[in-house]
Length: 116
Image (cartoon, rainbow, N blue to C red; front, top):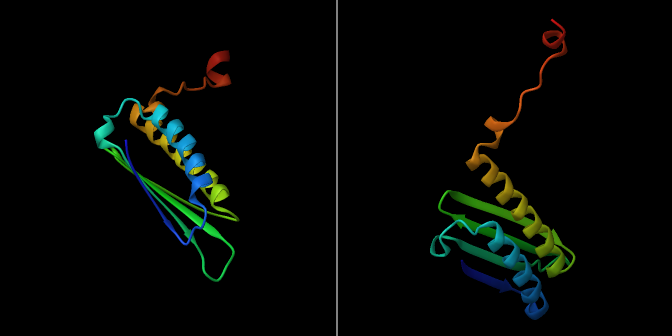
């Protein structure tokens, strides 16, 4: 996986980098079946100048599509946690769609038919 993360107006990226590494490991486990050269992760951390709020935006480019997640937070780690949690949920939903889980869902038998 190719990873590119940029920081804009963020003073302490070291603790944030450690947190992001954990999330990247979790995402890599979900994306084992993709070729590592084809998966790209672009992230950015921004601090609003007029508000005491940080924003984390993450874009994941896969061979089957692109997933994006953005989340605000009081500090960079909180915004990263929200954004990566949303991205993991999107990855799971995307993979379920690719596997066509909706077609394999078992249909409920109606009570009227069972009694007849």
